[in-house]
Length: 237
Image (cartoon, rainbow, N blue to C red; front, side, top):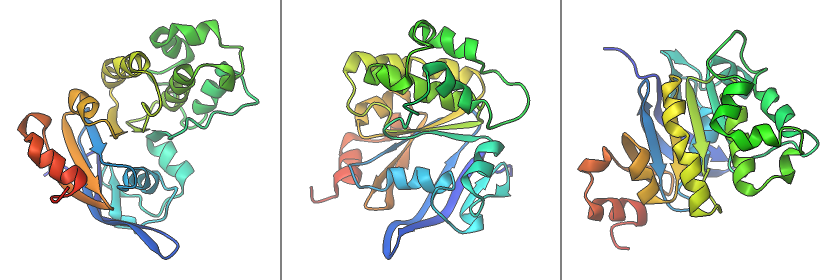
């Protein structure tokens, strides 16, 4: 049986003595969009940090293309094809929009679907403002720079950590409107999202987390509203 593109197995994570993840199992197949939902503090961002090597984990706890990568440093995981759009965007304030985007291209060798021109095709306003400081743009435009920077590494898996947080609905719609072309480039997408409705619209499968545990998994069409509510907030919420 073929292994998933990306999978975690009994993944745990700690911040010092505090345990943030408890035996998390998820899988991502080629070309899938996976949503990780849960309230603030559920462990969603910690899961992203563990997958990308920003938090240490056991070697076999994270596997990518059949290889155990749990102990690899973040730069090596990026080189293998897992790229993250971090919460809060994390643009370089001293660099222009174009320079922020080009930094992403240094992560992997060789040619791929995503180039500067392709990013500009998806988000034309970035072409217009390519020489502006990255942090001088609106919040939504900065988010698109962060997504474009991650795409410039031509990832096999794109992790999007709270990309809609604090943005207006029209901007969120624009951001999620870019997902079909991202999937068309061959990348699988993992999106961390507090907005259940938005997650259900874009995901092939959903994982719900609460207090470091996966409490529910399934296809959006197969998950009753009550089950999602209980998994998100707790049975007695």
